[in-house]
Amino acid sequence: MDGARPMSAEGRAVRSTVPLDTPVGSDAKLQAPGQHLDQVSVVMKFGGSSVANAGRLREVAQIVCSFPDQLPCVVLSAMGKTTNLLLQAGEEALHARPAAVSGLAPLRAIRDLHLATAAELEVGPETTAEVQQLLHQLEQLLVGISIMQDLTHRARDSLVSFGERLSTRLFAAYLRAQGVPAAQHDAFDIGVITSDTFTNADVSYELSLPALREALTLPDGEAGPKPLPIVTGFLGRGQHTGAITTLGRGGSDLTCTLLGAALGLPEVQVWKDVDGVLTTDPRVVPAARPVAELTFEEATELAFFGATVLHPQAMQPAQEVGGQLGVRVKNSYNRGAPGTLITADRDMSAALVTAMVLKSNVTMYGFLARVFDVFARQKLSVDVRDLIEDELEHLMSAFQGIAKASYRRGMSIICLICNVQRTSHVLERVFNVLGRENVNVQMMSQGASKTNISLIVRDGEAKKTLTALHAEFFEQQQ
Ligand code: ADP
Ligand code: ASP
Ligand code: MG
Image (cartoon, rainbow, N blue to C red; front, top):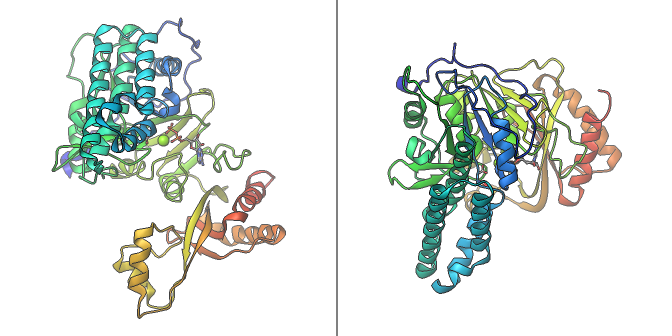
């Protein structure tokens, strides 16, 4: 594993803070950033909402160029809702005649968005031809799905890969057209090597870290412009099949941290459409506010319990390289906001509850003595979690003869990420709130890691409970 260790970032990376206030708009001139540096100094990832259309791509280019002292590597997701549209196109192709594939609504929407973006960004004939070629290949793949009437996980990954392959080509060409040197890279060609578990592949750190480091390290002392690498998020290559894989929905976050770890950087930036990781999902509780600092463990726990803001495995690369990589979550719609900094350790002295997650529509199961064994055999953690239908059936049959097992649907888990040292104080306040709100808790558990307390309540009472708990811990003097 030694060869996989990235070199130290000392002397070549500058910790970034808030970007300069560059003017926003199509006419603002872009300056190529970090040309005085020898190597890439930061990875910046922009998600779907940050790159939804030509205007947003222009804005992202402004952000990327607003750190003159950084030589960024940029990771992009697919534009807007393209990944969903690609999956929808695949489903529709399954039931369409081959001749009708070309007219499928999701394919038309994808085609229109990318061709309009190419025209609006004036990327030039070469990139426009490349985009057309990819759109043609995409259509051929959909025709194949329609003829075979089969959509395997493997084909699904090839299908969704078009989103990131298109967005990165458009963005790199736009930067070049603006005089900023940029080179597009498909992650599966530069060393993101994964398991062959299509649609949810695991990164092989042993293979990927050295390969990526080699691919993205600039030659020593070479004169001339230093192109910004523009890399597809989400995608990898299966170690044994050699086919395109994906890292699971939201996987670009993981691509970003993986590249940062491979390059031995002190910081990567994940740019979203919110002011960082918030105290809870703002779509459920609009009063949610940004969390300034989190540990890797807290961020992982949040993602595991369903906060969609970060990919559950996104913290893994930082831990692989000994925790010296910081992950900053920023808002591409509000650049001045400080965002959230995620690191290996933080000062917990003032922390009580850091964030809350709500996961609805889960199933609760009962368990009795000797059950722990069953869980271990089924490779399930003895914890509060949701079970997919398949797992549930296996589990219930494994219970046969041991104990009477029961389960109940229509439940919600509310998970509180909190300070291990102060759980009794947290619980006391939680019970006060539950009493006041007259909510009946079905089950409660403290996770094995003890950074979380989970409550199970009925779906119908979940939102009210979360809102009240949020008000208790975040909307008043503590
Ligand atoms: P991106 O495409 O940039 O990766 P995502 O849509 O995957 O962005 O993640 C950001 C979204 O996650 C936010 O717009 C918000 O609606 C949702 N979200 C859910 N929980 C949280 C949370 N605790 N903090 C911030 N955002 C959250
Ligand atoms: N485009 C992929 C998705 O929508 C990956 C990502 O956005 O991170 O899941
Ligand atoms: Mg995401």
